[in-house]
Length: 151
Image: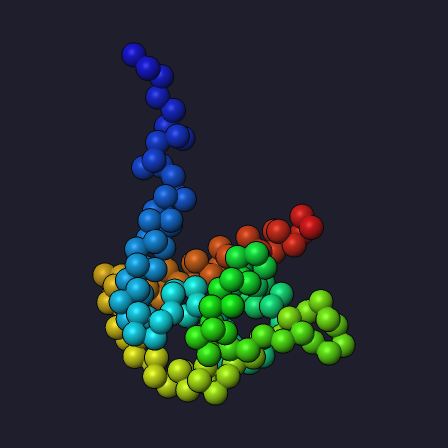
C-alpha cells in the first residue's frame, strides 16, 4: 500500500482554495467589464488611478503587486484604449509617469455599477464578506512586511 502524505493532499492545502476562489471571482468580472473593453487587471489599475491619481509605473506596480514586465503591456493597452497616458518624467527619464485621460476620468462614472453587479458572486452573508476581506488584507500586509524584512 502506498504511503500517504497528508501534507501533500490537495484538500489540506490553503493555496488551492485561495487560487480557485480568486480565479472564479476574476472570471465573474469578465462580463461586466467587457462593455468597457477592460480586463480585471486593467480594472484594478483604473481603480488605483481613480483613488490615488497620477503616479509612476513603479508605484502602480507596487500597489497592485505586479512587476514592470507584466504591467507594461497592460498599460500600453490602456493607453491604446484612451484611458491613460504614459510619459517620461522630466527630472528622471527612467521613470514612467501614468496619468488618467479625460476618457479615463469619465469612465469612472460609467463603470460605477460594476461592484454592484459583482456583489453577489461570492455567496456569503455581508458580515462574512467583510471578515474575509479583513483576513485577506491582514495576510497580505503581513506577507508584504515579511518580504521587506528579507530585502
